[in-house]
Image 1: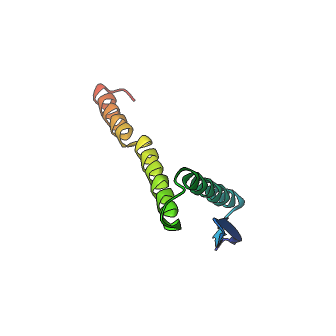
Image 2: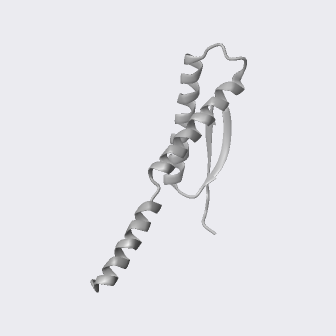
Image 3: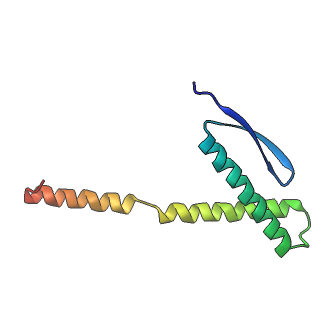
Length: 97
């Protein structure tokens, strides 16, 4: 089993101990933690009177998940895979390889 790196990231004063498999993965987690922190702060600035902190965290999670969902939909390759399959069948029918 590969060695894991133990790191800590902090989001909104909450320290999260993690284990990552590489320095590249560590950078991804640190960048993600920074983006979440920035998003929470923007929400606090925009909506200063929410009833409690959970609203900021929940809104940040929702916004992040919506962005991830949109990105997944944008990069859906299934239509291209199907198109390539159809083209390959047509080329086979024509005897072109």
